[in-house]
Image (cartoon, rainbow, N blue to C red; front, side, top):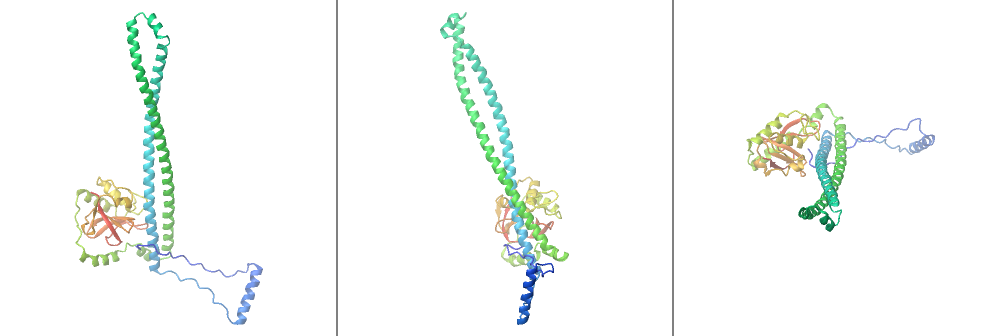
Length: 360
């Protein structure tokens, strides 16, 4: 695939001849012009349409469009992941707000009951209440209890204020998460449109070629990968053909079991996958949680060099890490390449290598 975006070929615009139903003034003007040109012996040569693009030019354009679609897919995945986190945060905030509200209502009820009892008890002046009390000692004991209860009431009022402030803070956080959710959904929609537009353009170009040519255009550049690997093998120690852990072996087994399943942008299986969806699901089957996008996966796990690759390692391509595959040994990767191709094997050097990680 082309590493950088190339200028897109656009279908040429053909000039239509004048029809007999055109405007009279235009027909007269055209007649006079042609008559004058004929008199001078200098009739202009009719415009010639641009030639159809070559297969190589179409290949470049299809590669560029699929690269843009892949970048937009990972951006869509990132926006979707952000939206999902915001939704989870909102649900958690709602639960916390419900519990805090119940605690607040219980504190209010308790404080109200205590205030009513205190009001009834303090209805008479203290001296008169003592004089009328049948048991002065009992009165004094109750007065001491009420005094201590007053301290507790003051603390209860303070706690009530803290609960109110806590609920307000939860509401502010919920408002912020709601804004983040709305922004993430808008971004996801924007990236979805980009993906669909680029894929539609690529399909339009592919439709101009034969079935055999389309199959060639959708290949992974295995021949280039073989040439690149042959040229580099002398300078690079051979990578390992054995996984460094049971989890790595399990991830490879899962990924290999998906061979032949269709590419589906934004999909994590089980029926279709995009590149990061396949690697995420493969490692999840081995009990390791990975982020959703190729960009985030590039920072998950330990970095390994090209010569240290072992089955299960994640291999990232292009300068922006917009494509990820899984190394399976023997100089091969398994990956969900792009729209129109199934999950398949390819040479590890079939795309511009940018780094690798070992999740576990």
